[in-house]
Length: 304
Ligand SMILES: NC(=O)c1ccc[n+]([C@@H]2O[C@H](COP(=O)([O-])OP(=O)(O)OC[C@H]3O[C@@H](n4cnc5c(N)ncnc54)[C@H](OP(=O)(O)O)[C@@H]3O)[C@@H](O)[C@H]2O)c1
Image 1 (cartoon, protein in one colour):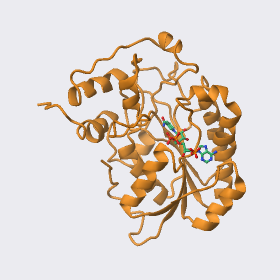
Image 2: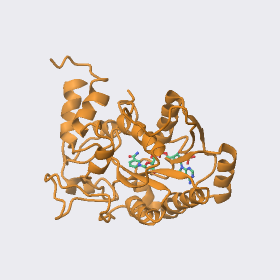
Image 3: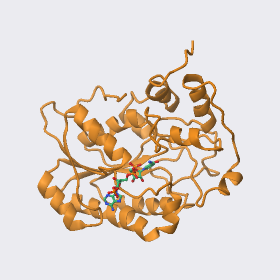
Image 4: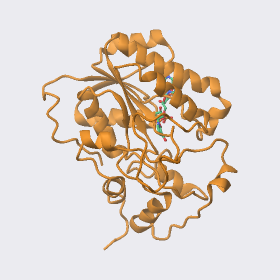
């Protein structure tokens, strides 16, 4: 299920958009293309590698976009631990590549909507777990436990100087397609053991259409791109049991035990989503969005 963004007075109905999207073979880039097709928005995927300035220039000359979207970057396979042993490749795509694209877009006076990450923060004394005090857009990243996050924080800092960039801090993205291995819910239902920590998360079915609307409104700057509130691993797994599979079982382990089976640390945090919520007041809380976009459409159990 894909949401529509209602009530916008910004784009004229007749206005012509042409989107240039990077990340054709990726999860978020693929979803974005489908969404444009569903909404009748003209789009093309970029053929260039992000770090190849000449190829990016060629893409822009060919496509003549009104807006550019970046859903390309290395995320690591099978997970971000890959970046620990591939630091140059990580810098090439996520730092040099993203900056090159931002700079080329700046030269062409084009807005770049950049799917970035909110995994650059971790709970701290000023933002303790369970208090509802989330990190704001202007806060300085405090999580450098993985090379992936470290480079994402570096590039966010540099991108601040580009007034043509809209940085969207995505976290633990989720969709209603529970067969996708990249989906946070699919991941945690397949793990042998999971930690249990409240986190801010992004329901893509609801928020990707919002990112398109943000482009149409020419919004820029940094945005915590998560649904308001937090949800824990166990709360999601209990919803999964309730709606999808009552026989499902799971086991928890501590952060210390988790550290033994991963290479790099993972970030856990709450992002303050009020800036996005003020712009899109219809946006649902994380728990309501999970029910609407994930669990109701996948319901196999009569819950009443
Ligand atoms: N999925 C998550 O959990 C998550 C969470 C927060 C933020 N994000 C961010 O959202 C963005 C998209 O994530 P995703 O999950 O959709 O990633 P993904 O499925 O791993 O796809 C990455 C895409 O980037 C392309 N790419 C990689 N290096 C490139 C380069 N140097 N030049 C051009 N294209 C390149 C890949 O194409 P090739 O196959 O041709 O290399 C692929 O199409 C990433 O920046 C990621 O950091 C993701």
